[in-house]
Structure formats: C-alpha cells, structure tokens
Image (cartoon, rainbow, N blue to C red; front, top):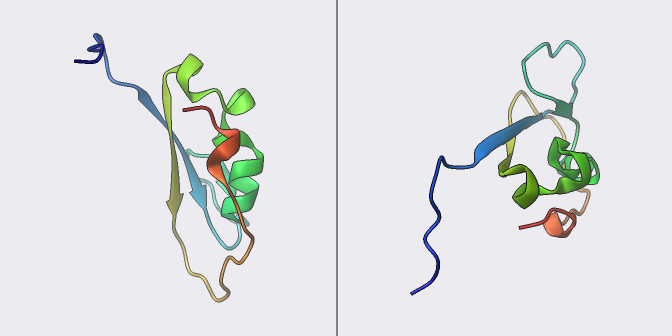
Length: 79
C-alpha cells in the first residue's frame, strides 16, 4: 500500500477564464483563455502545485460569443 498523506487537504488556487476580463471585479485572477491561464502557471509562482500544496482550478464563466481555440497543456504545472 502507498503512503497515506496526513494533515489538511491542499488549498484551491482558483482563477476565472472569461472571453473578456473588462469589467470583471471578482476575487480571482482573470484570464481570457485557458492558454493564457496555463502560461501564467495557473496563477501560481512557477506553477509549483506540490511545493505550495495547491490545486489549480480554472473556472470558465461569463458570456462567450467566440470559441477559445488556443491549444494549451497543463504540463508546465507540477503534479
């Protein structure tokens, strides 16, 4: 059997993905594409999820009139 982790669960690092961030005044960082969110390491310094004990969450919201067609990969984020 593998190691059992003890302690509090990892904290969420939430960001929102919107077609436009203009007028957005919410509590989370706002990005206009998943590609931009990934390029910013999910809003975390260096994308170090493990070292910071975080779970990166991209919350897509708002009205969209165009598709987000930029390719992205979460490979820059550590697991």
